[in-house]
Amino acid sequence: PQSSAVYAPFGCTVGDDCNVVGASQLVRDKRGVTATIWTTGLEGGGAYTVWWVIFNDPAACAGPCDGGDLGIPKVKGSVIWATGQLVGSDGFGNLTARLREADTSGDRPFDLPGDAVGLIDARKAEIHLVVRSHGPVIPELVYEQVGTFAGACDVNACEDQQFAVHR
Image 1 (tube, rainbow, N blue to C red):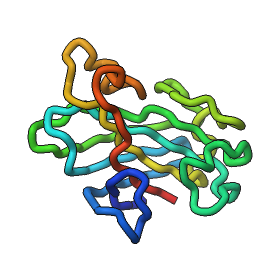
Image 2 (cartoon, rainbow, N blue to C red):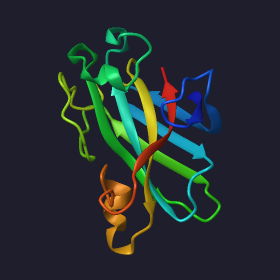
Image 3 (cartoon, helix red, strand yellow):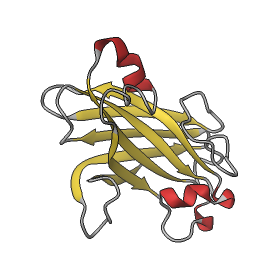
Image 4 (cartoon, rainbow, N blue to C red):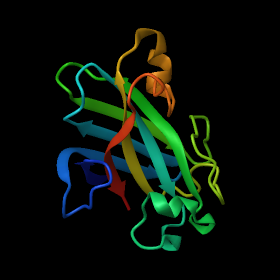
């Protein structure tokens, strides 16, 4: 297992302006990966999704892999829905997801150049986990709020809030 801190706010520079708000663990095997995130500071009563951000060839990133590298075809990047959850009033999240190599069954919000069609090699890819808010729960939109990238974003303000990096 690989452990990593969960950082906020999204997009902060690790080591400079990030707050540690939780922990994550990534377990790699020959067929895929399993991630668990334990996090705090979420909006009580909110809907959240977690996203696999996969850099299948991290050596092709321009520097440390980040969202800008997803546009580089040689990186063979993918963004795939991992899991979703409604958060209780305490603002704590405990989420677990599994991704098998070549599985693209989850929502894929972006068409990326050189898209790798998911995870190519579980043992070599750099994987970031992104926690995305979909705002307060809307009962008739719960499925979309916890299962899609843009679920209820036309009603609530959606934003990426936290992340973890597993190299």
